[in-house]
Structures are given as structure tokens and as C-alpha cells.
Length: 80
Image (cartoon, rainbow, N blue to C red; front, side, top):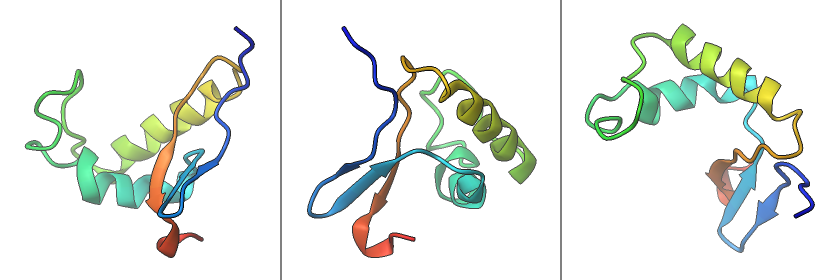
């Protein structure tokens, strides 16, 4: 298999893209900081925004590897 890393993917409704530091607030507010949402994940809910920022920083570093695949999913109507 030839790895190509996390490349953008678009559908008519969604955009799958690399996560960026600017996504930390949305990550924390919308899911990572919610104990009910993270209940079945392998890690606990984030307690602070800094927790989400640290995870994103680690993920961004991992994205330099061609065999790493992590997408941020957003509605195309909300594209930046």
C-alpha cells in the first residue's frame, strides 16, 4: 500500500480536512469536553480547552507521517 497521508475529501455536503489549531475550541465545546460523548472512547473527556489544544498539537505532529490519517469533518456550508 502506498500511503499518502490525510488528504482533503469533499462530498456535496461535507469537507474532510486536516485538523488545525483553530479547531481546538470547537473540538472542546462540541464533543471532547463532554463526558457523555466521550463515554466509550479510550480517553476521558477533556477538562479544559488546553487539553484539546495539546491533543491537536500532537495530532498535527503525527500528520507529518504519510501513514497517519486524521480528518476534521465539517459541513461545507461552514467552510472557512
